[in-house]
Image 1 (cartoon, rainbow, N blue to C red):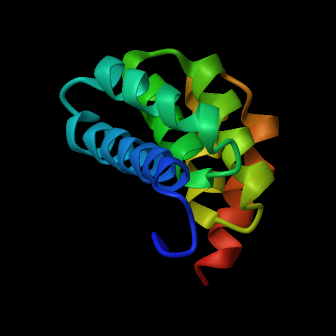
Image 2 (tube, rainbow, N blue to C red; image 1 turned 180 degrees about the vertical axis):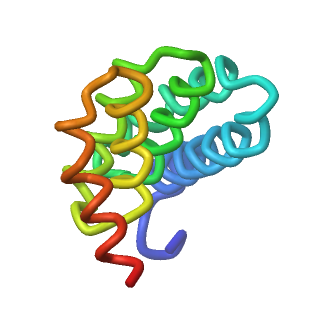
Length: 119
């Protein structure tokens, strides 16, 4: 890679990749005990990788742990926009809609999709 590109081009690309990798893994590491800190790391990743469904799902989990259910629902919907067949995202979204937002009618479709995918 270095032979094909000038060092000034390659180094910034590698630094951004390292930064994204570090922020994502730091978020995963601290999400249970410090979900607010995980969100700070994930915000840095989602800005450069808006099509990463896992990052959106981790943001959903962080918000859910903080009790920010509307934000959590929004994040899981973004994750599903990227990965519409993921049963875990449907499952989590269904529970958030049902319990967090008291919208069982909206939750049913997502819970059914999750259930059908795991059969």
